[in-house]
Length: 132
Image (cartoon, rainbow, N blue to C red; front, side, top):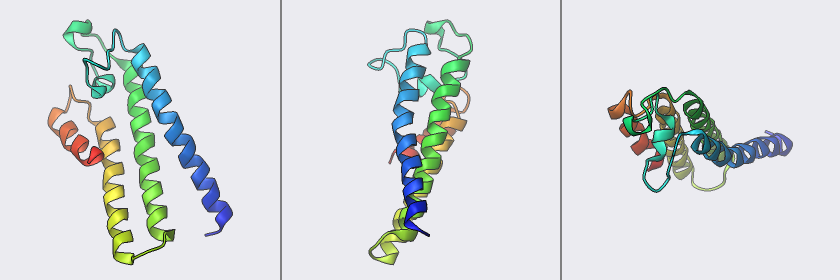
């Protein structure tokens, strides 16, 4: 693959990694009375608001937050796939790094697709995979 194509991938990855925190911040602003000190980040991706926040649907923050996690997961998978293929160093370590990075990316996507209030066990499994 040409360096110019890799450079384009790098720009896309950088844009995603800069966009994700902005999207999370926007979701936190929209979520009613969200407090990062008292609530989990996953609360932004809930299908329904907790009882203390009125118990209604949480569509806008959920879509923004979960979209940011899906973007992050796809970018993580792309990064590790490219890094493993074109990186330097020991082949075994590159393969191991690629596999672990792809599993982490799948974890981010899984967190987004399994809101804690709907699928708590699956959400926790994906959280462990995505963040460790």
